[in-house]
Image (cartoon, rainbow, N blue to C red; front, side, top):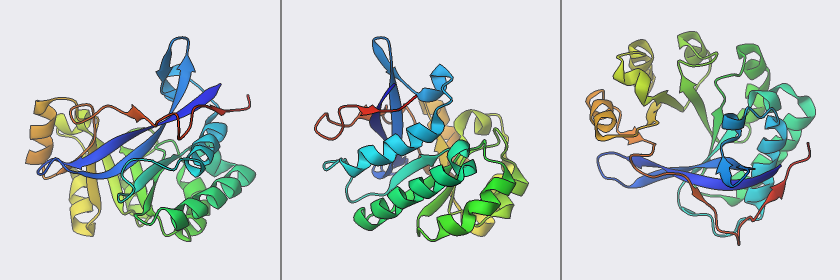
Length: 222
């Protein structure tokens, strides 16, 4: 399985300007590139590492003056050796990418695993991001249990009026809120009405592959 890197901007709805870029993995599926999740892949430890190794050889990643958001899977967090290797790579990236690094914690991460890893993650001085609030294992207790910097909400949930308690908590704690999977003008309008100005989704931009000069393919051992 080959992994390529893509980036998707996170933007201010009020200005249209990018505020950060999320780094995404894409894998080959016949004649097209897909998200690993869409293939039901269970190689998250290898994918997490491949992304970090790919970034290490990427010299013209867009938005050098903007933070990069990286996904960290529950599988990597649960494995001592994989977590140690990932943190070593992340520390190097944090030193090199002066605009800052954000770590998106998977919604599938159990609270006890995250509690065990949090102090080590804190040494990276990265922005800590709770991904996909309201899905997987995330809930208000999960949000309140750790000092998050950012919380990402799915636009479809907010369109249904869900997650109001979490939104209020984020406001009280000054946790930055990001509406993700914003895919149409209606999504944008409702997110803004709910006081969330930072957006991510196809309405603004689809993920774009990094140039082949950055990373053509990165082999993942199966």
